[in-house]
Length: 539
Ligand SMILES: [Fe+2]
Ligand SMILES: [Fe+2]
Image (cartoon, rainbow, N blue to C red; front, side, top):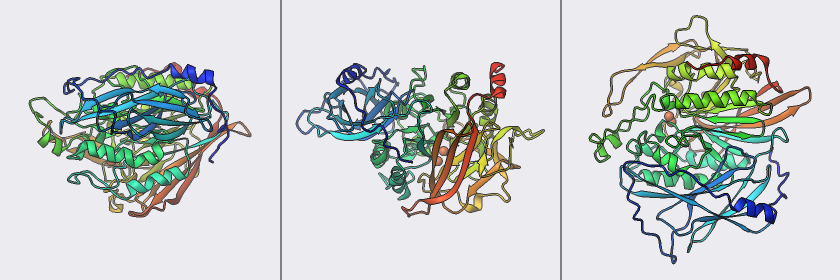
């Protein structure tokens, strides 16, 4: 469903000048380990150039985009030149420099972010990023359509890692972490939702190199279309900032969530008739997923600095408040037909891998029900599985097991409930083994954790449960991603998203179609949601 309509639209000179004034004004992120500001700038001759280039949407995908990159040393006059698809790079935007110091190695990482505003909807742009003395690096992006004006495609997966080992090879890697990039790119999606566990740098002895490998591998696609992330448990690099997210927060330029402290950890954006909400589940998950024995043993002053990767409850309800406000606003809007949540850990799983997390059921699912979230994309479990629409819980279920609404696995009405997808086969070297799946479709749930400390990972305590919510799972191809073809308006007053899962074997670059289903719902608002939303409170 690649669509080049609007490719000829370009910035007028006046519009370009207007956009030129809209340079990033992001709040620098602070950390107790931040290096002093005495930074040697690279000389003009032989200056390092931009690398790790990637694009992100702003809160309004039709008009706001940010381009981010990194450099191995501080550079002079980092900037972006913007143009239309067939015009030169006439507009220049200064980039903001943001740095952090990696707690494990003491390296300072230099990142650059150029924010663009007042762009035209549904329009191709080309850009170059550069600094004094460096060869420019070029890319392109397309802004989102306005409202229901046209259909588009997006893709999604999580748990990628990197395509080749770095350092001691402690972090996960596979060839598929490389193969998935051109496979996604071939489908020409408007954007990609990345469901957490990006580089797994928290397991690496060379985390800065790991991140560089991750971004340079993905730039083949992420420099040309937004790869919009959520933070998974492996983005928690204990020692890098209070919750370990300082690297993630510094490297991405994500829509503002109103919080300086938690900037980027959760956010939302609108693309066409969809409101996407990205969450950080470690705030509510029971499992101790951010623990890294390597960092415990090697981050200087780990004990004396009080480093602690177990961060459940860290936002003290701030994320919950954001989520409820976003959901209520989206549900009130006459222009939003689909609410999609991108998050990492899962609320249902039928594999004895990590298991689902009761904390998500307790905190998020009542809100998803109340405001009628249509779709959740997640990862963490390293396989593909999807649910029927779910709403409420099975009668009398102490485990809050979600209740399926419908039994048709090919056509689902999400006005009846939320479809959950696990798309965790991005490239990690440990896919969920087939032997980990229960028969027939028993769910696995983390209900609590055992004793632990900052030095000893809390063990998970799991139980099994019925899984009537499970609609489909792929037990054959461990690697894959999903594409979503959005039709904003259909004859008869409906809107639909056709979902296709592409799977590949280990070591194979061939991603073939494995599963397909359609989500369809009536256009417009729904009385049940409005009534419930009007009475909503969080507890
Ligand atoms: Fe993972
Ligand atoms: Fe994970």
